Amino acid sequence: MDSVASRAEARVAALLDGLSQREYGDIAIRPFRLTVGGVIFGLVAECHEDGEGDDDWAELYPDRLGFSAPWDGRYDT
Image (cartoon, rainbow, N blue to C red; front, side, top):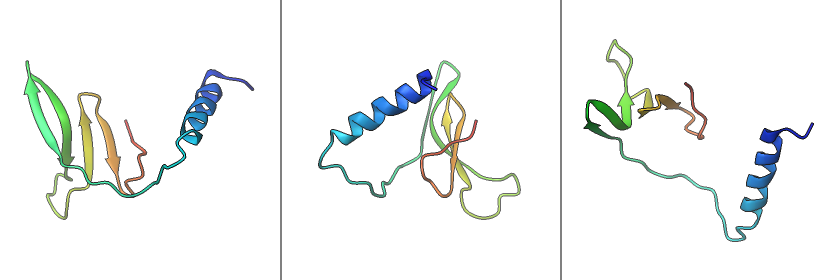
């Protein structure tokens, strides 16, 4: 089926194929938080309420997209 999503995925694949020197690898990020007019913007490290362990996930505000291990770009809403 030729859906909008399949056409978009094909377009992204074509654009990426045009980048002959591309390499995939690990990146580093630094969490940040900025509040403007009462609205939070940023990538905020979040932990479980019990406070044990390392940061469990990062939340992208204001959209509230949650990123977690294996840190492959997938997110949860």
